[in-house]
Every structure is written in structure tokens, then in C-alpha cells.
Length: 291
Ligand code: GUN
Image (cartoon, rainbow, N blue to C red; front, side):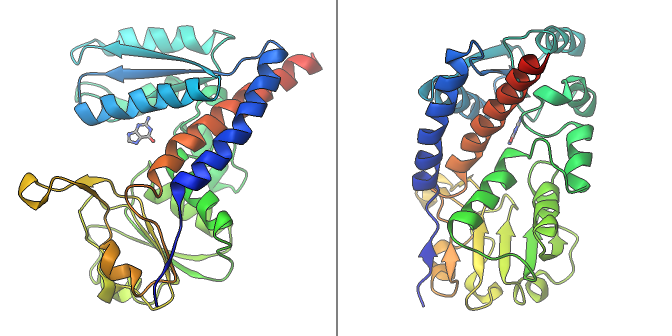
């Protein structure tokens, strides 16, 4: 068997084309969607992610701003800026790029963002709504994965799903989304005793581990759907290329459907950030119209 490739680039393009129309409609009514991205420090990977987010907004006609602070900035300075943005009617989405420098209380910063502008879906109120099965903002990466399942006609109801990774950004919200869709979900992580025992019986495997080619073909049940959330750079002596958490070549021969890296989940993450920001602007416009 050779797996069908779930193409994130193609789906991202399709969705972004439809966003242009929604942005144009909002802009015509005086509600141009606006996203502010806050970056603290000079982490090179974060700089690339933030630049890509801002450029993607502009490509669909949204307003976007990047605010950069030095790594040693006081938390109170960022908190004051967030309070200002919460009150700014032109700003529909606020995103603080993670990780933050060590002297920051990450949770306090995320809680300071107005829940209605929390387009990352990391505020406790939004996490709670997702856990209750009534999501308001869904974290962008797992949201993108759900869109890929939909596009690939992957039926989740009654399926055995294994999520590898328990982060607040990917693993936990991914597990909640799969539960809400009717899957039987196992969350594995660094303390899991026998990972292969779990993955070998899974119909769906989502890998969010952060280790290059960690998931190998022998860990996958024939006919499974394999989703690779990892973005790792191989060392220079191995070619320096980007690769995922899944051994793509090996797993492709066993799985029924698989996402590549690059060109799989990656482009969907920013796409769903745009979706959440447009959604925030639409809700805001509706509220104003009802006043
Ligand atoms: N760092 C890595 N992924 C993310 C994300 O989805 N949102 C934010 N804010 N920071 C991140």
C-alpha cells in the first residue's frame, strides 16, 4: 500500500481564497479584521513564525501589526500593551508568540488577553469551552488537523486515536477535539511505558513530539491515518533539511493517509489563525449591528 498524501498547502490555499471574500465583505462594512502579534526576544524560529503570520494576514487583505520587545522587557510593559489592545476596537485578535522569556509568567500573560480576542484559543475560558464541547476559539494547529481530516473524508466516530504529546498548544486540545468528534482517545507522552503498544492499535496517530522521524513504520497499523505535527531541522551532517516527527518514507508504505513535512499541518496552522481572526471580527460586527 502507498498512502494518500493529505496536502496541507492545497487545502490552505483553498481556504485562504475563501477568506479573501469574507475579509472584503467585513472591510466594506467598516470592520476590517485586525491581528496584533507580540514577540518578546529574538528566538530565530519565533521570528520566522511571526513574520509568516503577519504576511499571511496581509495576503488576504487583513490588517496586521507586529510588536517586538527586547528579551529583558518587564512583564508589566507587555501587560499594559495587552490592556490597551483589549480596548482597541480595530484589533480583533491578539497573539503572544510562545515561548516567552523565563522571567515571564506565561499563564498570567495569556489570561490578560480578552477571551473574545484570544485567537490562539489559549485563554482558560476558551480552553474550558473546548473541553465542554462548545468551542469559541480552537487552537490553530489542532484546528488545522481537524480541517485536514474533513478534507480527507476521515471518519473519526468510533475510531481509536492516539495523540503523542500532551502540550497545551497541540496535544491536549487535539485530544479534546478528537473526543468531541466521537473518537476513543489515548494521549501518550514522554512517561508512557510502551508507546508502540498504543500506536500499533490506533486507526489515527497524531504525532506532536518534537523529535525527528520518531514515529517509525513498525509503530503503525496498516491502513491507519498518520498526522505529523512536527517541524524539526536535521543536523547539517544529515542534510540540514526540515523533517517531521514521523519517518515519512517508511510510514507512507503502511498508512492509508499521511501528512508530509513540509506541506502538511504547517501551512494549516497559520490558515486557522486567519480563520479565528476573521471569526472574531465577524462576531464583533454582528454584536455592533445588534446594538
Ligand atoms: N509557539 C508555537 N506554536 C505557537 C502557537 O500556535 N501560538 C503561539 N502564540 N505561540 C506558539
